[in-house]
Length: 191
View: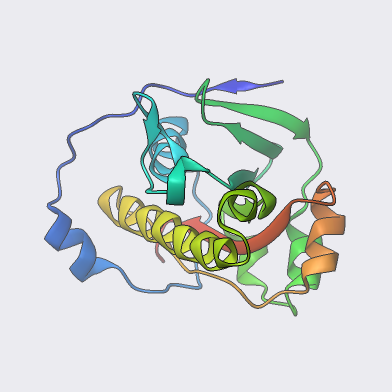
């Protein structure tokens, strides 16, 4: 069952400076639900629509990033930015398999939400040649920072994970051949 996300709120209660100052990598989370309105805000920060553009800059507006999420006790979803909806893939909890594919970083399974940032490199390489690879990596950094700052703005915490076996993550998430996982970002309430 797809999840329609609430419209993002464009004015928060914390300043950007407070969010930058408060951002730190946290690997331990409370057993507490992240509300759908908060998930909506986080996903809007990753690739949300702003008219004809998105919330993250992209070289030549090639937009190579694809966002997937696991939500504890709800399943695995694809974020359709154009409709601001989570498209249901499965209700299976993939967190423990992600842990195994990520060299046993157990806090991935502890997090209520995992944002998995992936990319289709061909979208950017087609326009810029091999230099497009660099542009994709730059873009994933922009996207990840938005996620971390939005998490802080919502009173949540997160950590960027790049240490995983790409092929195993692709297998766990059943990603198409051209989609490459670049970051796993566990998010939860701080202990």
